[in-house]
Length: 234
Image 1 (spheres, one colour):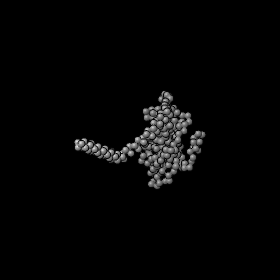
Image 2 (cartoon, rainbow, N blue to C red; image 1 turned 30 degrees about the vertical axis):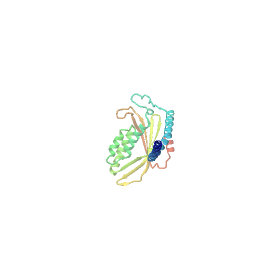
Image 3 (spheres, rainbow, N blue to C red; image 1 turned 180 degrees about the vertical axis):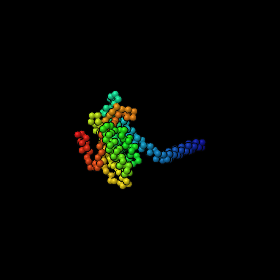
Image 4 (tube, one colour; image 1 turned 90 degrees about the horizontal axis):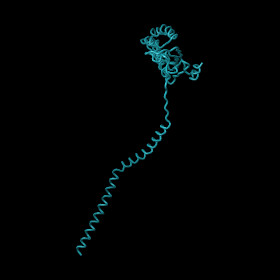
């Protein structure tokens, strides 16, 4: 009988120890969860945000792929030794016009002569002869004798291109700032209008673009662009 009682107490002790161990394991699991709770919530939030973002990105990619459009611009074969103006993009004419305006519109007394001589290489008769008469023989000596400095600030938002046959006209507007003998003059809104055409090209002028006409107008403030465009179309 004593042995049975002893055996029963041993079994009860084992059961008791098992219950304590089970409770201890549960407490450890809770502590582990509490330690990693913040990280778990962060990763869950990232996952919840990533799913709709990925879905939207896939929809956008499918939309872009389904609505894509490929445009190939193949210029026509140039004439022997010459490009037609319609085969040359607008930006090439704009670049030539801006180069010329920077040479004649922004200068200092010591650099004006070199700049004007460089600008002459871009001109075509009869404009070349007129430039020599008006600019080289008259304007240049006045610049050097009066120590005149001028800067023309180009407004890129007001640069326009007009085509008519083999002639391309680029209109450039901006502000002209001038100093004469140390005295600063009021800044004026001004406009250059440069008309170009094409001649047989060469290594120095791969498109053969030359300037045939240049007009300058000061004090253009308040003029409407629509009026200027109508004037070009006449």
